[in-house]
Image (cartoon, rainbow, N blue to C red):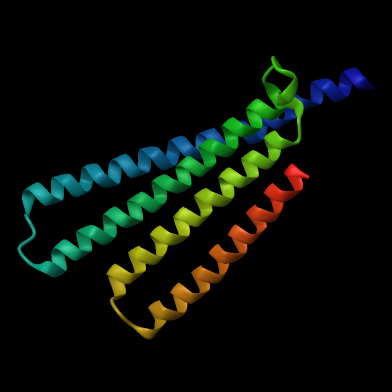
Length: 157
């Protein structure tokens, strides 16, 4: 039974592979979007602030996409290191590794939310909806920071 359980860790490779494929696809999409934007920019240099603002929104959306790709990559690498890679150090098997992975994903999610807010603020401008969105994102970020702090305090004590 122990042998089966030790070999079952390779089932995690399915999740790792999916995360890495997702990251590569998102990186490729971001590269294609920026390449297309550069070509469009060279063909038709923006002469108005509205056109320049639309370019900024596309770049912010691309940044958001790339940050999501980084999140998938972080999850994939973290799961691989935790469950598949041969353990070389005794601290690798500690639960702190999984908590560190969760914390990394939480912080990347916060960055994605902040970029999303900036993207919407640039696209829409100063409206009441942006205020509501900002408040909602602030609550989510606050809850995330609170959860991360509690998670850190449980690791310490």
